[in-house]
Image (cartoon, rainbow, N blue to C red; front, side, top):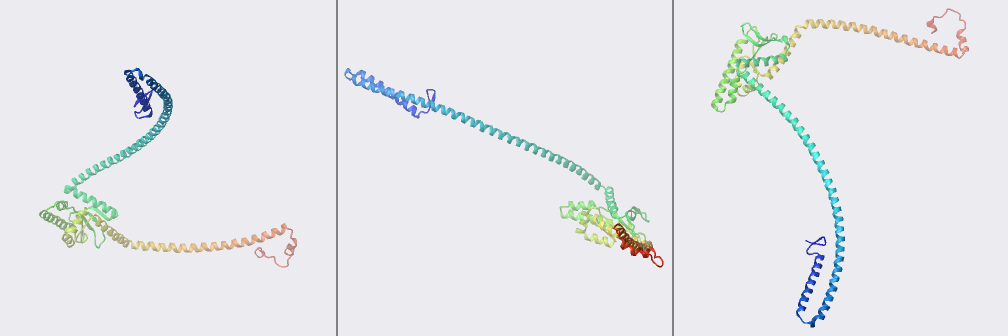
Length: 389
């Protein structure tokens, strides 16, 4: 770039080329003057002619330079106007871009705030769930502590049995911790009628043997755990059969309640011989689910027995009900006759009302000719009002 007359031009622009040509001509002119100075006076006239021609050319170049300067001034003005319009357009575009960026940033901030709010709510939910999990973990640990002790484990089974019996039977159909004639205390005694008679339910929980089976990871450990399970269940069956099956006092059988569905399933799946031994000893093993089904069957038996016990009272009540129904039928018949008589009376009243209305119309219209035959004296007894009607 080169600056001329306050304007900037490129090196290869026409203006710069013209000015360069003019400078070149001046240099040639100076070179000719120097050369002619060394020659003689004989060549002065041609030199003067060349100088005149060069003067004309320089004058033309000056005129062209002036026109070029005017054109360049006009071009500068146009460029200034174009630059002003370009600046205004750029300011407008920048304002629009800034507005869009502000809107986008505002929307992003709103969405971020909403997302943070949702995240806060979810974190609160997670905190609550974690608190519940910690509470549940504490309850599980408490349950493990309860089940680790035989006495507390027995109390747990009795509580679960009590809850199931309360839901299935009425309060007068069973007794918890009932004492038998042999001094043994049963966890639950169901008062069934003879036959079969009162039946005992005793809660047992062979947890150690079951946990040993679950922990066994070698054939030897599995065999030892199975032996432990067989010994524990057989001992429970034998104890229930000897303590709670009393001839003439209890039913010819008893129930062994296992408060764990897992233990019950383990017995039936892998120790069917223990279940058969229980059948032989008249001790039936039940889980919470099967115990509820058995108690529902007992409830039906109790209901049927109580209905048989109250058969006389039921027949007496049915006879009284029959008498009441007969009396009600007679009274309904009497009421029906009264309604029939009332309907007949209403019909006769309607007939009399129609006749009275017709007589009133005739009197109002002075129809005495129609009344004359009716008002003529009659020979004979006077008819009764009902006959007149």
